[in-house]
Length: 153
Image 1 (spheres, rainbow, N blue to C red):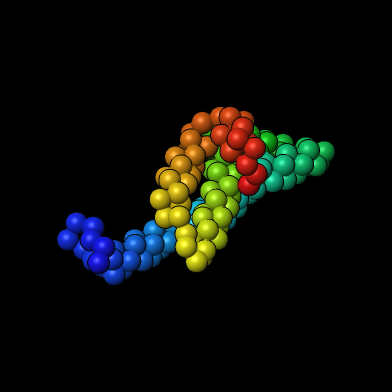
Image 2: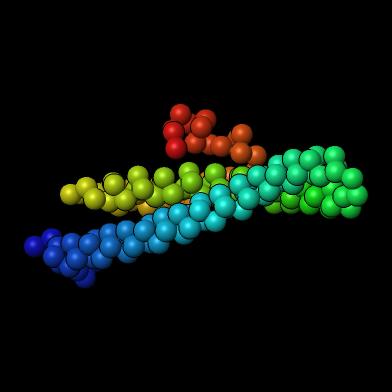
């Protein structure tokens, strides 16, 4: 009988299965977090973007009306604030990073569904995906390592 440390081959198989289940559960949780982040940051990004556009258009229309200068000024200010917040908050970057990372989690889960998944390789992919996600949020999105390696979202 094959022994690894104090374990039998059967016990080693159980440990691998348990390890597989833990890794798969962790990836699924991360996938759900990225999915929620993708929806949230998409809503924030697009609300700020389209909100500023709508306020700018409305301000342009209101300024044509007599006696509504205060409203036009308020709409222009709101548009500027929304644009500034969106730019400073990097909502587009957060939305895109969550989308790309969710896609990576999807691919890892497909690999986990294999009859004999390579747990070590998937674990390394998972660690790299977490690092990439963080780098995308704080770094320059044009320097996305996934794009340089030829991988597509």
